[in-house]
Image 1: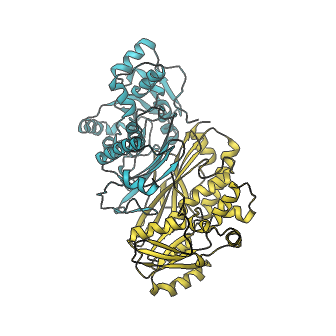
Image 2 (image 1 turned 30 degrees about the horizontal axis):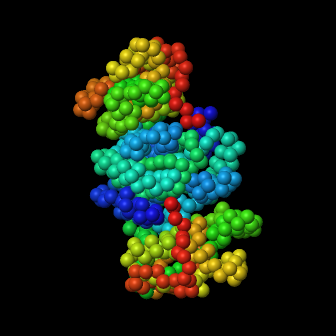
Image 3 (image 1 turned 90 degrees about the horizontal axis):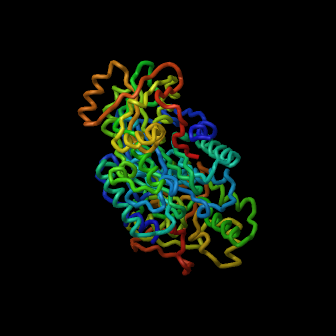
Length: 309
Length: 309
């Protein structure tokens, strides 16, 4: 099977977006932006044995490859639109590719995003997706806008993905719910879009709250105090911490893909309304100050968020 | 060294393009298009042992990772602007990364393109670049416009990269000039832009003329007759063929990154002027017909252009 047949068989589903002038099948794809829109672009790679286990399901790998990118678009307050897929595979395994492409298609159709191009190459399994979205000019949520006095917030609960990963590594059997948190995180696109004009800065929690919040602090040239007692935790994580006292799971564990953001006092009411309209739990975990350091009340352990190397 | 330090040290050179609102360092990059522009996007991966030898120079790998993408932009008649880099590395080797990033920066500065984002991950060496460019709305060169009677043309000479690769595989020592053809191909951006309004279809020769021209034929629903006697060949390739009679090198060999395109009779004069203004040799190798097959006069060997799997 050549590349052309591979793409035709598995990755050339129909595109309904009128902004796309040319999708898969030429040297490049072509699309337009509307007046007043900026293009938002991000890229993320998933590599075997680093981001997923050797026996991971192709459907889970496809889902997560897309979600980690969607989550970056969410953290910008943007709307996801188009993506390219660079797929490096050790060999053609039709069952594997079929399951992978089916899952990719399902999630893209759910989020109304279009696969517009890509490349397939032979080599150790590696999936790089580049996601493009749009946002109204100058309205994107950046990391750099946090100001002294702003509250620090997180969406959903944190630490679930890290706890599940820990259980798997320890040879324990996580519950179905716990596995879903690791393998099928929800990108917070609706929340991200709603946070424009409400939040002063935003990031998604991919490497661990402690590290990701630190990126906001550095980009905004501020500090923060957060308190582990305020962390929004699921039953599983709560019970784990009760037994082990190990706060590093929600603090330094990555892969939750919740949003961490800062909101000025004056926008607290708007945030409450947004939380209700998105039906999304949002929790204040601390506040921004001018110290330029991250103080974590209730924790003096290692700050060992995920390191890429 | 964490990802942040890695990017700051090696990949965060200054950006001078005013259309970029936000480059490296946030969840995503932001840029604008001008009125009447379409975005052109393409992605290509280079994977160790498939696209380059294990001992390849990092400067050559960086160069080629960028050029294969620039060549796709050239084949669309577009102007290259922005790119993201997804770099999967087995480990942090500072000398390697420094040489890689220096070469990447040199070539991007030469072509006035900006690195606007990326991802670094641990794993077997794999480089995926997604390149974005712009083109005037509805003016891009597609594969699908070739019509009966159009001439089939190629730029430069063909087969040089394939011959060099063959020599390396056979344990022979190619000349410096031959190595340059394989490791440092020139993306035909100026020619591509000039071909708008002149050519009826265009593709870059990455997998082999025979296969790449076939993509034009399929997309345009036409056929073609080409003659190997017309092929533009360098001294090296000519002398190889004289000795071996092996036309598969220029016909099926990839990696030349020349452009293959079709031009209606009525635009022949414009093409000649373009060839002079670009200072670029352009050779007619055949013509389009309505046969829906590719007839190759002077060749009855295997059609074994590069297969991705």
